[in-house]
Image 1 (cartoon, rainbow, N blue to C red):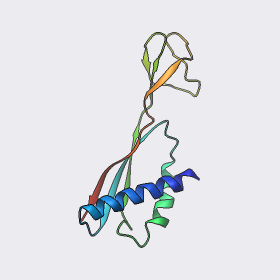
Image 2: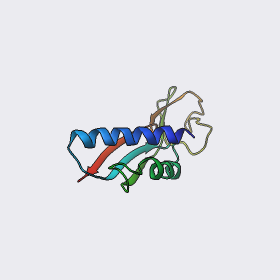
Image 3: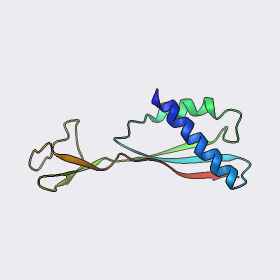
Image 4: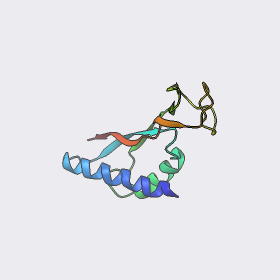
Length: 113
């Protein structure tokens, strides 16, 4: 259900920037979402169609770019892409790892007319 609040934020950001640019219509929005961001594309799309209705963003295409998750081991400094939910370093099997990529979530660009 948090996708509704996230989608509302996307709409608010897009409308604000479109207004600042003097745009009449928002035609597309590019979103960057990391693997660990726990955002479901289909849910965002579903809510988008409901909440954008009646705004200058109605009909705008959402473009989702997914960023693969990456971690670094605090013990051996090995950088890796986790394969499962254990998040253990494959080099030294340490559980002391930190996300370095993949928790992003942002509006990357807004296409307007």
